[in-house]
Amino acid sequence: MPLSLFLRRQTKNAFRFRMRKVTISLLLCLLTALTYAQTYTPEQARRLFDEKYDMVFGSEGCSLHYAVNIIGIYKTEGTIWYKNQKSKFIDEKYIAWNDGSTYTRVERKKKEVVIYGATDEKRDKYATKFTFVPDNYTYAARDEGSQLVITLKAKGYPEAVRVKLFIFSTTIKITDFHHGGISDDLFTFPRSLYADYTYADKRQ
Image (cartoon, rainbow, N blue to C red):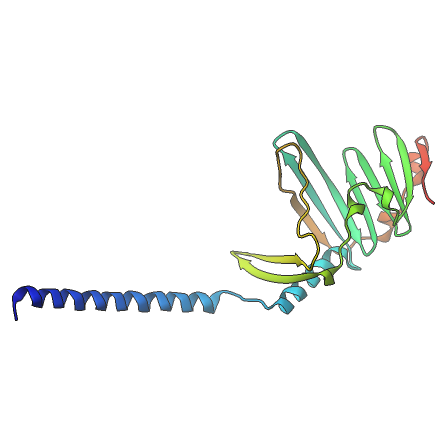
């Protein structure tokens, strides 16, 4: 056998051997990744979502702080409390109480108190435009590092709502989340603290 042909065959065989090793190594890495990566069925994802949703809007209640900053053009932060159908909201301009039957909003600069029914669509020009029905969505979940990401996809409904301020967008940062220990008294409007305010009762 000519030496050149022998070397070519040897080189080809060595290449095949190395490729085989590389292929086996890649398969082992893939199997290892599949072994340690948590996968979720749609049903499991829905259960995970229901657990988190109940932590926020369930009977134990919760509180959280949020902050929004669109590169200095618009900046605000505040605190929200939830418990079942009740809520309280406070930021630098407004304070609002919803005790389940009455929605009361204090406008600090105007020194005005505006009262609506708890379900009146006019009470809030943003929040009342949207309703959430869990069964209207399909669910998926995945692990991203130390975080669990749950994705909701609307069934035949708009999949996203985009709020735009000029050409800028932002992320709302949530901090200081606390679950449980929320008293019902927190959602009652303390009328005596605002005795010198102007009142506008817009209940039907």
